[in-house]
Amino acid sequence: MHLIQYLDDKGARAVGVTQNGETRQVQGVTSVYELAQEALNGLGGLSAAVAARGLGAAVDKAALLAEKRLLSPIDHPDPTHLHVTGTGLTHLGSAATRDAMHKANGEKPANELTDSMKMFRMGLENGKPQNGEKGVQPEWFYKGNGHIVANPGQAIPSPSFALDAGEEPEIAGIYLIDANGQPRRLGFALANEFSDHVTERINYLYLAHSKLRACSLGPELRVGDLPNHIEGMSRILRDGQVLWEKPFLSGEDNMSHTIANLEYHHFKYDLFCQPGDVHVHCFGTATLSFADGISTRENDVFEIEEAQFGLPLRNPVHVEAEKPVVINGLY
Image 1 (spheres, rainbow, N blue to C red):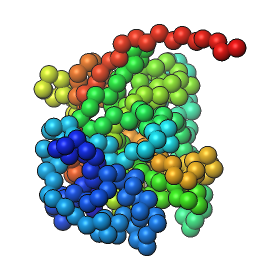
Image 2 (tube, rainbow, N blue to C red; image 1 turned 30 degrees about the vertical axis):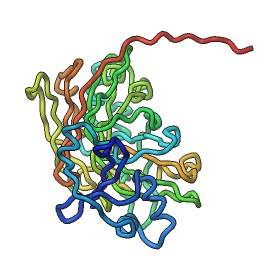
Image 3 (cartoon, rainbow, N blue to C red; image 1 turned 90 degrees about the horizontal axis):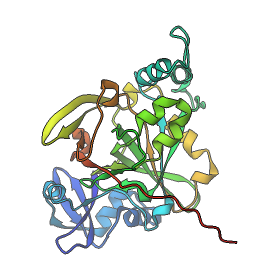
Image 4 (cartoon, one colour; image 1 turned 180 degrees about the horizontal axis):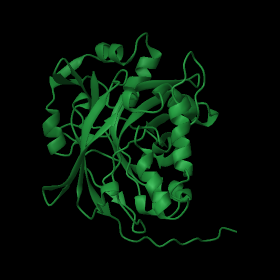
């Protein structure tokens, strides 16, 4: 089962569900957040909440995508209560680009392990614990709140001070915290965890700065467990032509950590277990156009697709005008 959020032909919010190859509107509900709250208050999960609401007219989700009427598959009535975070160095091969960055900057001699490679090896050795044991914690970063999420089809803004505007094709876990402070997983979605790789390359301690950027999700929320093997395609279009494309792999078969281990090390913090909050947690990637020498520019289009997640995620790049920073005292 897949869920989408969209604007109907009157401009009102609506939710659609894809089941058995057919997409129809879910009656009487305007957000996945609202539907998930009903699931928490009922006796079943999201499937039961959809069944209880009933289905309406058929929905042409491809047309919605073309008309830019699709919304992010999850949001929150108060965007400050949606948290976007992620983990890095979690996929087989994901350390190679980072390691090369650090050695190119002279941070380590060629025969010594960088900190990134050390952390990656820690994941290989203890990122998939057995029998309920706790595995090693991964690299973790904060991206922002709901205000940074660009809808499918809409431009991803890159700030004027950015040194790079690069895609990161990933899978994100989508969570709602219930009234008891327990994270409840709604499902998974494609994500473009957009980052500034040139800033990161200057010094790996700039990773936090490089991640404070916009991102995009969806267009569809896949309800249920994550497939063990995910093989999608990431590409960049310039002036309607393919500038770059490359497959990306995800799922636990292609990762150095289990999803459960990554979830534990995020939600072990009480800060991230506040009732009513939504979490979008990106699980990392090993595929970047930046690693192949690509530098994007205004109006380039990112496209990420994987058949198991429905419609492709497309977003153009928009470089924002400079915004002066003025600090006024309030004394």
